[in-house]
Length: 339
Image (cartoon, rainbow, N blue to C red):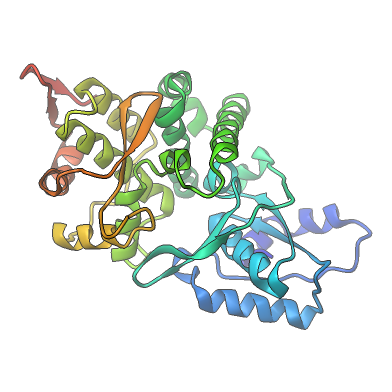
């Protein structure tokens, strides 16, 4: 299963890889985030039926996060489960969505609200496939790599600070290192908490804000990584608002996110609407919004008693603050410049 866009770029390479294996069928799906819904799942499942797929069939997902999430949910549910293999072709998919067995599609009410935990039998990651990515999609995907540095590895975060320009040029050595390290972190976290009942929640740093932004803009304005980039900066500010994240660490997170390049402007959305969308987030408990915040670079945790007034302040000031590069006031009253 792949998309027309990926098939156009990599179809010949895929056919060569299959070699003498002739007993396969190509299933094309729309890989836009706005197409990640149950209708696409139905079309894909019916395509498998027409191809004669049975319980011993292998579904290979070749593409980015949307293709992988849709294919994963189809594999988990078709005939109550067939084997799944991922060949991720985007940064987001290689370091995040293809690892860990989470599948799902969106509803109008929220992102990834329908899905299943369904681990693939294999994930094949080839960083050279990223050479074909458009610049915007490549840059946005780097937000997920920054996330791993924030939540789990201060050394990775420092490496990104020092080498982001090389990564943006798609330097093989730098890119291979950060992809490998990101996969190692995600695999470790998932191995400790497969079904997101505890530790795995830290992988959602920035995602509570990001999912709300994506939902309210109907999955047509942001690429996922771009929304995560905004979400991480907001999470850093929120952490500072409630005394968890230091001003210096906010500055470092914002500065590193900015290095990946320009983001879509913050959409004109009321704070009340964003908070309402957050209440529908899959991490929320009885309508109580949970946020992943970082007390230090290289560590994170889930917080469920965050004052809504603090969230509202972040939503009110974040667009101007993060666009203008204003300073962050530390606890001692001095103003730190966001670099």
